[in-house]
Image 1 (cartoon, one colour):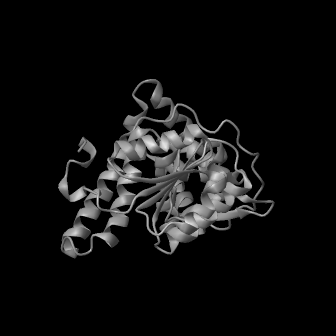
Image 2 (cartoon, rainbow, N blue to C red):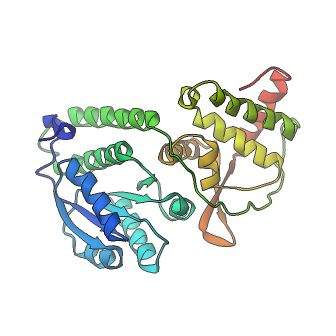
Length: 304
């Protein structure tokens, strides 16, 4: 048993297998390497064009891993819709791994119960698989351990996943192309804040990386808040891919923070009326009001 599965309480050999679907041979190999390294059993590897039918025949699975490395085909979109539905129904845990160029489309098509990885490295991939199998394992190992011990182990694992993801190395590049932003109506309420004030704060935060390691000051929640406030004052909309770049952390980590901020009601998701594959993010009215009042109160003090 390898190091990733050395804890007997996290041994999953008796669980149903992991089903892998990929958009290319290289994609299938990447996903298979992750699953094999984790010591799990692969039920099958199929091309994305065959995945939807294969899923309908799958009696049970610990997890389904979808690996995409090209443009979104119609068959891939159909498979994602099926995975999104089945995962939401609790049939299996689901992980979808894609490239930065697919970020906006994938985020728009998948619900929060599907783990979304973008340009993830081995650590992030292993963390996602660990959490997916743990969630799935709660159903299949209900009689193996007391429910309170099982729940506690899952909480500990979730905390560890968050810790791992927050300390991983940053992606070397972000999405190479971001769609032009669309105008929005200005927010109502809250003190007036100049655009230059927010831009100065953002520039000051970025300047720290010239003198210190960038990850020393990682604060994706605040960076997202600043970027969305800047966009709101400029009357612009922000696509998910652009917001993840502003967060200055790996895309998968940024997506985790984004999910949390949406759940807490701080951010709002808005579908693009001209492109159903894309989702914009904006500040909730109460968040905008709080930010504006904060900057009005601190005045000319340095805020980074």
